[in-house]
Length: 266
Image (tube, rainbow, N blue to C red; front, side):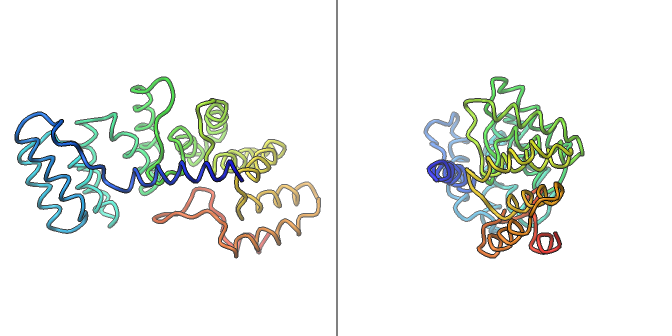
């Protein structure tokens, strides 16, 4: 429970950081025009998504065309509305101006919203060149450190063994904060490779961090494959699902998400 509480606190901080536009200290910005653009950014970010906000961002870019955060913030409403082409045009400009700040975010969104797994891998691996010693930051929703996100992309591209190697390496890193879904995703990948011992080992580790319906469901699948009693686990998975303890995301569906009907049909 203590591990889960610590994880929840760290994720909450990440989510707050990623979903509340950071106010910039405009006094630290060089150039009078860019200072004014900074002030516009700080003000317009408070009413993101409204036409007036987008118009203010345009004024800021006229004053300071190299202000990368304005491009990124101006892109967000297009992403939320599903206009991915417009979002990408703006994010590409932000990345070109400041790759270390925006590559991870663009890569995650390519994974989460566009299912552009190859593009996401390219962005994350490019970010690794800037931070070769390890930590890359988290996904925008706070669920995954970006190395783990890259592994999910490889898994989605059916490169399961490569995904396993990336996650295993990351979990061995003493600096890595084990995420809410890390062991589950590794367990599912081992399951898909037919390595049920390693799969179950990770599902059990996941249970110690935080147990939810999907994890219990896969434990029951392992038991069924091994001709062991799995019905109690199936019932527990259904009960846990009905209690609301399942994988959730405010915008999209989780990779390896399981639904109640799948559990019922086991």
